[in-house]
Image (tube, rainbow, N blue to C red; front, side, top):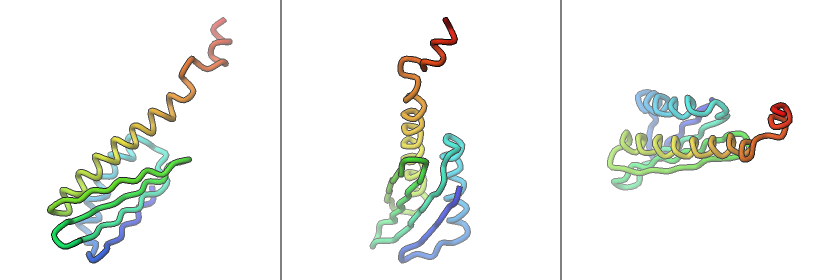
Length: 109
């Protein structure tokens, strides 16, 4: 998983980088086919905003979150991405199991 962190009106500290990596480990634990993750952190007046785009085969997943501090925004972003990745994984895995694959039905007979 390639992780690209950028800061808009914000310096990305090693502590923030480590925190984002630890939170996004949960996403990669649920779905192994994550190719690329782009995270943008920004400060707009009093709001701390985090946006992320995950590139998986055949699909891009985008989520954004804002909060009073950066760490809580990262937490809610990780939760949103985790839900979206699990939903995408279910769609991909259920695609071929709707009525049972033909090759498995022929083998049972």
